[in-house]
Amino acid sequence: MAATVIRAIQTAGITLSSVAILTRPDRAADPAQIAVRLGLRPECVRIVGDAAGLVALAPRIVAECASQDAVRAAVPPLLAAGIETVIASVGALADADTLRALCARDTSALRIATGAVGGMDALAAARLSGLAEVTYVGRKPPASWPGGGTGHAVIFEGTAREAALKFPKNANVAATVAFAGLGLDATEVRLVADPGCMHNVHEISFSAGCAKGFFRMEGLPSPDNPRTSLTAGFSVARCVLDSLRPGPHFSSPDLMPA
Image (cartoon, rainbow, N blue to C red; front, side):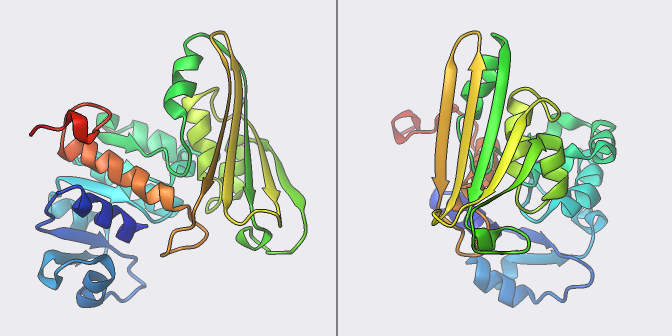
């Protein structure tokens, strides 16, 4: 996902003079190899092994593209330092201890990417009129779910909180939908292994005082990680661009300065 984020930011006309990469301490990292993979000049890449090292570099903004564990370990100290941080692994916030640790810091610097799904602005708006029901259905090819398999199966039914905690690599969208709508414990989730799916499919239905809605997105897989929707990386890039280049919310070329 990181490569998608960086390519999207550069395509939008932003020059990245320096990029710091936080890697796990147990993983050897070659800055030159990472630079090639991310499409950056080797001299632009800095490698750090922990959140303290990243904070010491005082980055303008940080984008988490790793995992729920990365959110738990790195985001609290980043927020404590007042560093604007975008998170993709939204399901980490389903854990009460993680959420409590973040809320103890300055959450005004926290940005939540909508990830692989759209329509969250409409869902959040509908909430103001009174939401009666929100259901998220995630469909993926059987091989994309833990344990694999080949047949059609409903592998989970429950709340968004349960889904995000049980499937930390597969159900971040469930948490995203919950935060925009009824919350983690009132959002209904169904996760399906569907051999008829070529890609990841996200379906959201809701009933509110102002409207009834149904959204469906079929995400193409990320070339870096086929289990992740390519849209997720572009969502993180959009959050970064909104910070680096303030302006109209819809940054259409028609609304950009000449």
